Length: 266
Image (spheres, rainbow, N blue to C red):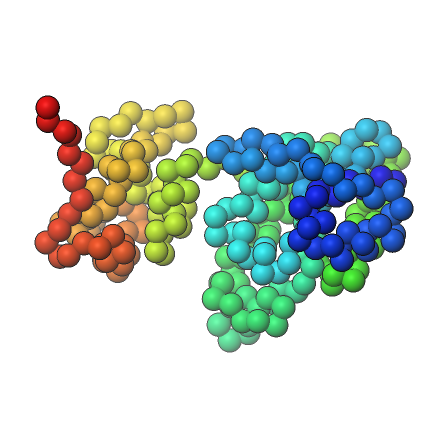
């Protein structure tokens, strides 16, 4: 059994690599190829394990905190999709523990209370597993053993006879405009999409193959700045007074100031 570990993992978590080498003598540290996905370049997991039939098992390791942080920019979703595209089997191993506060349902990562909503994180975990990606949890000391357990499951072709991998959920690349606007305070992906579609509709953008009417980022910011002047029932989804005011303040606009696109006149 050959285990190929990305060299970044060796730099960031040498104890993990040492644990793998103790259990798997044929552990190789190498630079795993970065795959293009949308505007990003992502490795298909921290570990690639070739199976006897030539197929690949890809495993991504995250600490509990790393996992939560990777949700913000959708990076974990992109990683899952890249693993699916370049490996027969894929898994995420979280070296830590996610729990949930019984009072306010906040996520507790390694005994540290966070502001993440438990319902939202559980929904994402469900989606990842519905895509066909295994999710496991373990302490750092048991990581290598967990890798071996997953390998043992996927490396028994006789037990898989007749099983067809049919993905229920896929994660296509996200539009760069959505990802950019989603970084605004309290916005997120859904609100960014609704703003882009609204601005595109106002700018008479023709629908694309996904029926989106995304404007440019500049146009979206212009319409964001004047949403206060638009009737509430006509505003884009999720853009209530509080979100509009928060982002106007973030953009440094006074109550009588707005953003406008101007063309230079020769």
